[in-house]
Amino acid sequence: MPDYVCSLLANTQTIPVTGADYYIVRFPFGTESYDAHGMHDPAQPDGVTSAYPDPRSGLIWPKHDAWATLHALMYWEADNYTELRDRFVRDPLGLSTGYDSTCTEDRAITPGGQYIAKTWGMFVHPETSIALMVKHNAPGPVKLTLAEFKLSYHRDGEPPCP
Image (cartoon, rainbow, N blue to C red):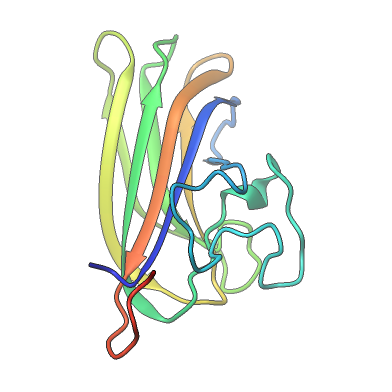
């Protein structure tokens, strides 16, 4: 079992039209499924305090340099879109090392809502936040009725989480 886990959950949020840009999925503070190490804290490591739903409420700040596994779950309401895209991004707000996206996926739409799960492994660093980012091509805002974003990694020689 991983020693460090941050598991975020958000119910319905509206994803605006963003053009070519991606949108950071936001997660309320204090409603985490699990965050024993404070990786999703309003008082962020760079000294700024966030409040939901500002863009920083979508950030996870890893506690260590590590090889980590990221997971995301997205439930999109049926709407007038023909394409959905999502990605994991290191430093999505350009606060430290610069925007660095990975695991970008786009998909053709099937009838009804879209239900997407994804997993990716990547290196993480304590000074570099990570986020789940999404976009759609509908002419107006679209509802993401459920979003989950999870980070986990193991540190040898350290006691496991409580």
